[in-house]
Image 1 (cartoon, one colour):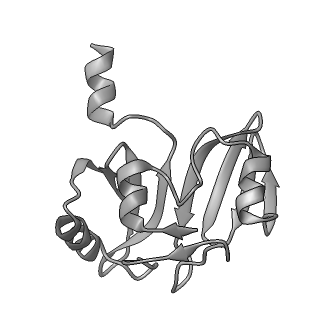
Image 2 (image 1 turned 120 degrees about the vertical axis):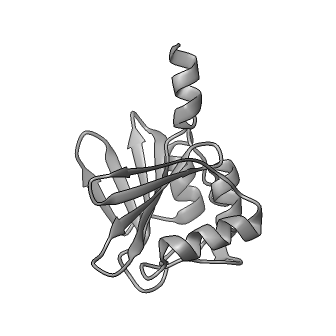
Length: 153
């Protein structure tokens, strides 16, 4: 299945992986996970991709960047721009500008810079002494913070 970072940032979908799907549906698409962590929720790990399930429903899709390249399950055929742990905040902002994507909110929390893109996907960077580097992207179906603030008024 093909996937693009742009599609993920605009829709929250990674190919056919989407919030609300069951573990069986995810496994039919991706095969068995490399590792499973059991805390409050089950976390299925596929290299850089982690799927968080609560009561058998996918509630969070996360991409982590601990390696020099993005490691995805073999079921994916990644197309286009792919960031890595060496991707800087400046490089990522350039990608967003070139792809026509906008951030809904930028905020800093401790050592993290958090961009909110598209439907509410959080793109998290961490501060290093010389630069700000990509750490993770995650989508839980929450609307952008500014929309949640409007709703609560």
